[in-house]
Image 1 (cartoon, rainbow, N blue to C red):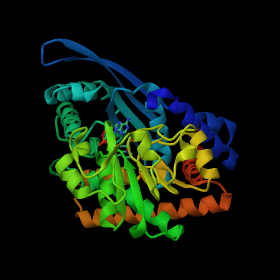
Image 2: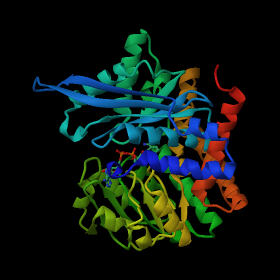
Image 3: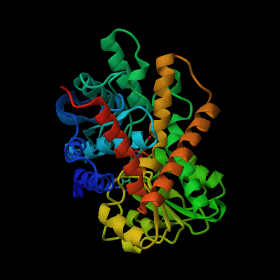
Amino acid sequence: MSSQFDVLKMARQQLAIAAQYLDLDEGLHKVLAHPQRALVVNFPVVMDDGTVEVFEGYRVQHNASRGPTKGGIRYHPHVDLNETSALAMWMTWKCAVVNIPYGGAKGGVRVDTKRLSKREIEKLTRRFTSDISSMIGERSDIPAPDIGTNAQVMSWIMDTMSMSAGYTTPGVVTGKPVELGGSEGRVEATGRGVVVALEEAAKVRNLDLGNMKVAVQGFGNVGSTAALLVEEAGGTVVAVSDATGGIYNPEGLPIRELSTRFSGREGGIREFKNAEKVSNSELLELDCDVLIPAAISGQITEENAGRIKAGLIVEGANGPCTPAADVILNDSGKLIVPDILANAGGVIVSYFEWVQDLQNFFWEEDEVNKRLTRIMRASYASVDSTMRAHKTDMRNAALIIGVKRVADATIKRGIFP
Ligand code: NAD
């Protein structure tokens, strides 16, 4: 769980390694190690039974050197300022790795949405949006969905911002329903990008996705789409899980059936009979070729890294492997396609959505998917060649590219005043 270790420390350790490779100026390193802005809000919500509850929420902007900041909003009981800051920093590198003109941000509310009615989630969202409205905006900082939030939550954010503007402002948030200025292909974008990254990794390693056994931790937006696309590409998904645990069948699971019949509520997939029940930690250690962690951070640690059997780990989630786990996995010859590359599909299509909103001109899904695939492939190739040039691992190669782009922009802009 993210709260059990210091994710911001982990993000800073990763930055420090890249900074050494880049021989980054000490002052610049200090600038990049801190978020530019962070807002903490404690806000009340009148619950359905008339009582008042106070929730803590955050919006953090890490770095705006390359453009407006961009990053998801997470509703989860473990959200805190430390985690939100780390996620904002990763967003900065992610946007830079895939070369889209954004800086990084992140937001969240510490809440267990399973305890709330739909009406309460709407009120919480509207009040939180209002309280962080001084930070977000279509030219300044654009939120998107993350764990625990979805297109409906984005609609409420857009509507709340539009009410105070006095006119509809679709560009203020991405991941909206298509009817409200969302983009075709956005819902599937992160999972689709994960699978493009997996295909590229397979090519480089001379492997055939059709012969691969894949385990996916987390069967939400990212995990279920990735699993479905792996299945469509001829791969065998042997295990999937959600927060309540997972299911395993070495012969393969029927992903389409699972996502239509059993998903949509926690624990649903575990009702599927033709599979063995496994815990989330057992899933990580199953006999498979590819592991896609697509749930939360800090899942693969020093403790369990030595028992991971998959040769290829494609990070759908943000921060699933700790730095100590990275060392163990890299030393044993495993390839980790890092989060800031592997799960960048979401922010790439969010960028497309924002461009479409600002222009009021909308693209067809095919166009979105083609452009997404092109950017993912080109980004993969540049990370792969940086990895070889610096004789380093893939995470560090991606960071070298991302940090360098942000550092260059910061130097060119200069430090105000
Ligand atoms: P989601 O809320 O749709 O799904 C999360 C899934 O993880 C659910 O199946 C949930 O049951 C499961 N889960 C939660 N806690 C767990 C635990 N302790 N152990 C195992 N499983 C657990 O969220 P999502 O949008 O699919 O995001 C998943 C990950 O991908 C997150 O790390 C998120 O930051 C990252 N990500 C998401 C996007 C996006 O566009 N949605 C983009 C980039 C990265």
